[in-house]
Image (cartoon, rainbow, N blue to C red; front, side):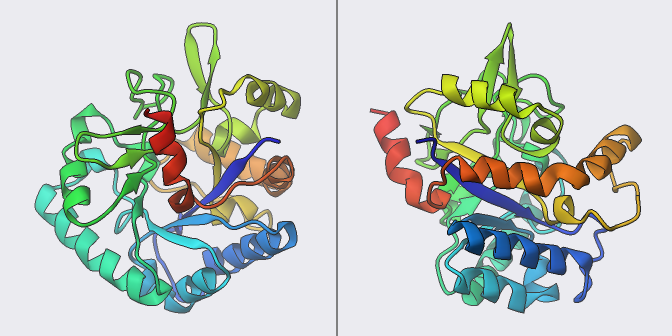
Length: 268
């Protein structure tokens, strides 16, 4: 059986983080879907949400899901300053842990922006007690690709585990296929084919965002996003929730915090 961990990048594309923002209602939709599928997920949470919607963080954790960290304000790591990144990450980690009632050990870079140029962040993350990252795209098809990185889970020199974005070989290219715009625009038969080719040592995971479930929201260009990508993502909302559900119905795996042992085994 295919075992896929469900992950959610918990953020507000409007960047307002209002206490009654649409991202809160959409997250509840995701939680209800998880409950219907008996699925426990990892929610990579923006630090500002600890202040704007603390009860949402509590609710997610109370339903048995993992709270992990997604930076303070969704700034790409390539634009971060070390001192600010360390201060905000330390403060946010503490706040999220208090709300979740469990240790926050996972990190995901905004836009998968952990690249050779931003690898300095790993030292700070390790110092703050993070045990794993899910932040790289081992491909060159993206602005923030890390094409020389392994396709399977591996350990950084500082001991942190990395769960790379799952990719499949398509000719000379590595193509992401289990989340975001890649999943939503891909025929499902192609996804099934890529899954059949996945190695036994690959830690598979899919990802989504609350706004992907918001099919009723009128079109708005997303900040810091090209118009064509904003348009495609908005159009994909009509089918995104159904596509994610079909992926999870193939077979779910535990949150990423519970798969560190698989990563260690793959490194032997």
